[in-house]
Length: 187
Image (cartoon, rainbow, N blue to C red; front, side, top):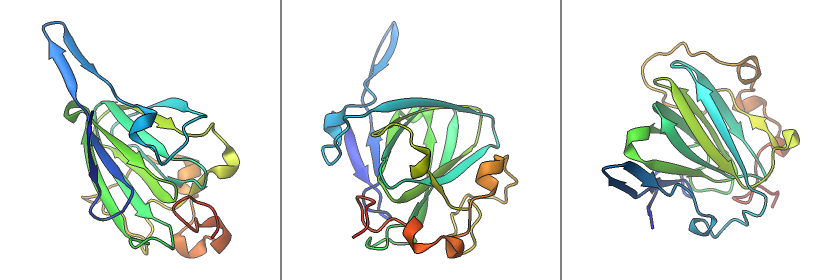
């Protein structure tokens, strides 16, 4: 069973310290079990792979009907998080978490948390979501929003997709496009 460490800044975000088993042949790590996260149904699971070059920034994205569970297979990333849940005690707080594939950790990201990552090296990220892809549940926040400042670190000029470059600033997101509770649904 892994060890779960809740973020000190954003409730519900969990760093999952996984337990690798190694011998002379190599290493085995169980990376995900739906029972680890009983607060979600996990009946419609989709797993994805994302490969990025060093310097790529993906995000920030958020959903009303989907949680993410990330496992970094290779490389290093800086995860950027912003709590967009108005009912949360950490509303509008941000955090960065560095993940290194060598550390064998997963990251659970609840509904309503804008998330993205900066590839600090070439990376391969596997992520599991609890709902099939639905483009109507895909929202964005500008990675460089001055009001919801994500501390990416040193001054960066990242490689950003056209879609992510067009993500709006927080002040320009209509209220009906913001999550209203930790479930993502309007209260």
